[in-house]
Amino acid sequence: MSHPPHPPPDSRSPQGAGEPLAALRERVAVLERENRSLTERSDRLEDEVAALANVCVAGEQLHATLDLTRVLGLLRELLQQLVGARQFVVYLVDPQAQELQPVVHDNVEPTRFPSLSLSATAGPGAEALLRVFARGEAEIREGSLALAGPLEPAAVLPLRLAGNVVGVISVLCVFEQKLAFTATDRALFELLSSRAAGALAGAFLFGAGGGAFPKPADLLAYVNATIASADRRETI
Amino acid sequence: MSAAELTCLVVEDSPMMRQLLVFALARIKNLRVVEADDGFDGLRKLAAQKFDIIVTDINMPIMDGLKLVKRVRSDPAHQDTPIVIITTEGAKEDRQRALALGANAYITKPIQAPQVIAQVKLLLKLDA
Image 1 (cartoon, rainbow over the protein chains, first blue to last red):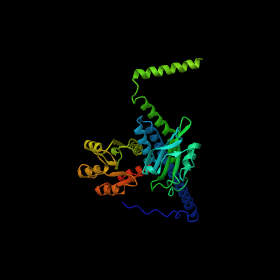
Image 2: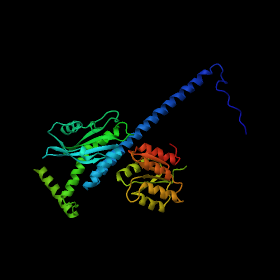
Image 3: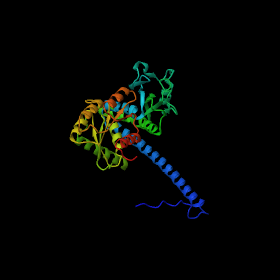
Image 4: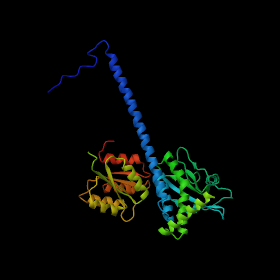
């Protein structure tokens, strides 16, 4: 069955023809703008969800093990696979020797990154590390990361533990496709600064305790004793 | 294509990356994700059921992603299953080899969830 063609929009009222058509066009334009705005908002939300997922997963994984080798491996994985760091060095402070000692590194020649004295004059590339260690504030490169390297690291992060800075992470350079650090990277950097040293300390305590989990009866006795002690303190 | 019965096999040895991939893929409606620790574990799971798509890392212990792609493509039961490989930037040869062996697409680390979702949806011919 064939239908007659639709009459043109202005055929019914030749005199006011322009008005309904213009109104319709305006309405379509408004809807298109709204649609674009909603799509952009949805994309932003998707990015935020992805960022949150990265931070949650990284945080959960960092504390999922008490094995020191595994914690160091996770640190490496997090920097490489979530942040996109191609070369990095993790330093811990040696308070006796007064130096920052490299403990984990990737894709770097270890001899090029020796321990850094906290008291001596810093050489090129080391100023940022010593500054971050002293101040406890991260230095993260803004904008393009193309020129980042050993002399000008892409990011230097403090490793904080119980209010003290116990080391630094130096991200020397990143993978080619990584053009700039994003809000997700900054959130991951903050997570590393505040949690990585805690994960290392947890692994240290576990290792120092013989690498064995407490027996359930010992755990119960310890928890009860701690609660009783806290109650006594409150009573006093 | 209806998404009601779709299944995806994620093969990745790193628990962190696996968790991220699963989290990203869980955002695709009605897509059930099954996890495998390495290529060998992946093959075991492929022997037990048919998947609509496979997302696999390349560098893994026991059996790497390249061997997995080769084995999957030589098995008539999974010959047409789309495969997405996850590679690092420096592994261009691995990427080319995987594509030559029959992988359909690749994603470079560090992975972005929206990119993973878009690639899987594209291969499953799901609406964006």
